[in-house]
Image (cartoon, rainbow, N blue to C red; front, top):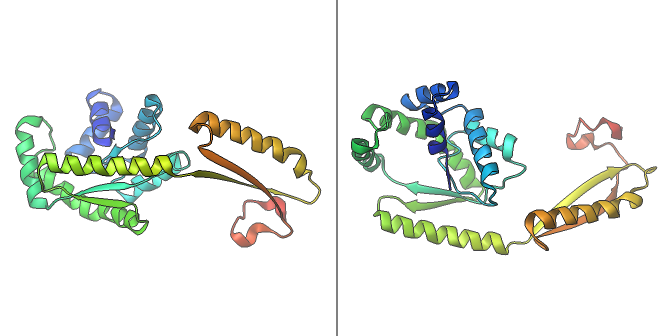
Length: 231
């Protein structure tokens, strides 16, 4: 479990220049710049060494989402988005109660209502996007801690089972011209990829399948303008 908020607060408490910037954003109920949050998350994932992570409190806006896809999208698949649904008046009461002992500067009525407004304007569109992709699972957050925890654990167990039993496939597309000797290097390449996948994910976890396709026309019709070598 990685909490974007905890990582930001830890950096904030470090007294660094970046921590000072984070402090101002949190105090105003604003979202911290994406490059800061993504770097903290990616560094935490790399140092942990795990294969699956539950990231709490991220992405909070479309800029966060875009930044994540740019930096980590190729290496980390988003398997699901877990949402706790709770009315603002209930959350406000809970946060004010928490503020009596939390010591957090943002647990006050002004910052709380700013965060609600930020959620409606910036985070809700992200949830709508993931809902469109059928990735969102919603849990009623108004109930007791025990009930919410039980439902959360049940969902994580079911998701873990689904991911563990799902076959993975790697498709590699290699485009060559008629003069190249693809048959000479494709088999060794396929074997190398298979070894690499087995080392990273376990034997048989990923199936590598290499096919040869001839390219007889420009691929610019598919908006791949950067591949000018095929003209």
